[in-house]
Amino acid sequence: MLRNFTLYVEKDYQTMSQKAAEIFAAAVNLAPTGAYGFATGSTPIGMYEALIKMHKCNKVNLSAITAFNLDEYYPISASDPQSYQYYMRKNLFDAVNLPPANTHIPSGEAKNPLAECIAYDEKIAAAGGINTQILGIGNNGHIGFNEPDKGLMATTCYIPLAEATIDANARFFASAKDIPRHALTMGMHSIMMARQIILLASGEGKADILNKALRGPITTNVPASLLQLHHDVIIVADQPAASLLN
Ligand code: F6R
Image (cartoon, rainbow, N blue to C red):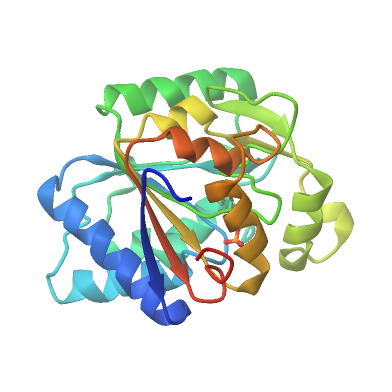
């Protein structure tokens, strides 16, 4: 049984992306100077494209929001095309004239990653907390880079990546030795404090884990299952990803 969730099942990736963009834009239009949480990965790219189109025809104004990204590889240079800094500029920020000072991503260049994590949570708090957080879901149930484990971290933290995640992300790197083994990620509390969460899932490959996350027991072995404890989660999935949810 699905609890607490608002579920939209759209026929394909394109309509799913459009739906997610409309929900997100409605939240931004209500609070245009609020803080919003962004994800990277392949899933939100269509949603970001739809948001850019909406921005161009004045249906949403993203230029005054404050943006906080979920995570970043560590170590990685901000100019590396595989960095999430680079991804966000290319796929969204540059196209919506969001001043760089309004965008925050844990720094893969920080000399002291632990201090960077503490400072990141302080910045989110100083911005008044996140209104709407966009999430994707990993094949192993991770959200952000909170990987399945016996325990999960509450605050933004420096963590080793799971082998499954390294394998899943290998497609983006020229060779295995280039894939970072660590990341900085918002922790479970940092994510769960968002007032609203939009979880995106696309493709048959996500069907099993989405079903486990939404209907299975709440367990740190499936970090996304903790979303069952959040009061306002909107799932936007395409039919293949939602195929196991009746
Ligand atoms: C990215 C992130 C990850 C991805 C997840 C799904 O910022 O936090 O949790 O959302 O790995 O990635 P894709 O969308 O590539 O399947």
